[in-house]
Image 1 (tube, rainbow, N blue to C red):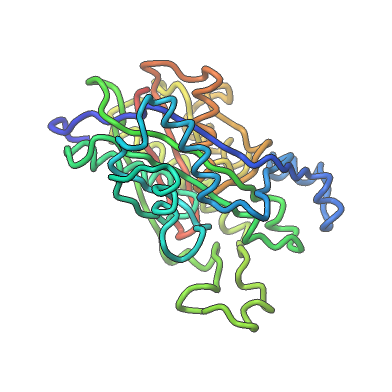
Image 2 (cartoon, rainbow, N blue to C red; image 1 turned 120 degrees about the vertical axis):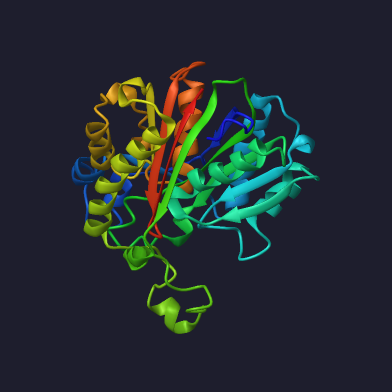
Length: 330
């Protein structure tokens, strides 16, 4: 990042996942699949499911409270709230505005950002630049999803993958030498039809036909998205490292989007990193889209996997198609 800008880093992390656990063995009773097949192909063993009463803002609120407490920042001090989500509480107001009210963060500007599973990295880039330029002092960035609400539990190709949860971070200025060193963001809109929810927007408003056609659920062309992800995860991380002027050998921890263990392993191979230098928790939570990376980051911080001075690489891909990576010194 530009040396004339203020150094920006993460002051606190937090995560929240719903209590209800959906295991592979329970999915065996719902669709034609089995635990061994799911674990072998994806690495996922269980995922968390929001209750009927819970929406994305509720999950975001719980994660945000913990992040603010860990940062030692009061809600009233937050200047900006960005919520990355593809499962907002409603079309508008934004989930960020609902969260702002729940927290009592009265002076914060608030908006949602939609970049699917890359949304958290996109949001970090936005918030970091607001702080680096001196526009704001503190920002709350949240990835929150209730993917169970848009998952077809009769589709064995997708229902095994997705779960619910939220992760949050508080951003602010940090000492020189620490914080975010680079961002790499990208998109390929031509790949949009490979991963989407077709109905519910202005192109295809809700109708009896859209409901009957299950167009309000996640559609994914699995093999095509897998090939894209294998290609882009490693290359996006490499480009972020190049921008930061940091060698692969200096990376202490990779925090990837938790979509598929084979995709994560391909990124590790590209970066010449061993699995002990990677935060992996998809076996417990599945793919939580924009919530995936911040939940993993919060768990890494909680468990002592990161210490001051460590070099971290965050990287993800998602619908859009989009991708994002960031290098930061903890």
